Length: 188
Image (cartoon, rainbow, N blue to C red; front, side, top):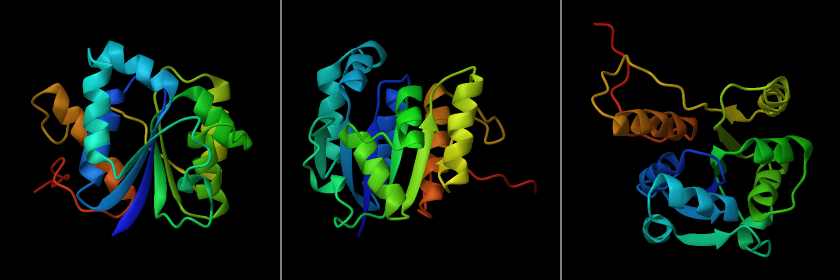
């Protein structure tokens, strides 16, 4: 079974993070890291930090706080198949792009890069500033997949959860994982 690390940072998009963890658990052991800022955002986006943390705890193999830098996922000798940061705040994007590894999320991302494992960034900001774009471009140049949560309509979404599932499907595809999150484009 695969091992995938999920970093949840303090940007809007917590429902995408929760759904990603719940979808990944069908394919992999999931090691989730939740930053303090993400916990604050949870209270605003889900109405209950406790309920959201409960869902993440239940779906994850392990759940860590950002200061737990002694966790196994902070070491390159702990074998994982990759990492996704969802949602990725621009602070986190900048830290990863410049090698600043001062929290468990950024340390795990640094390890993922140095070990040449799959890293997926789901940036949550709009519009992007030039600095944001430069950091994302730098990461893309290092082989990082940038999966911006952009709305798609070709799969005939019926409700907001369909848009979340579309992004989650795009994330799973980066790890070559099968999913039924949305119907792929079929022009016939």
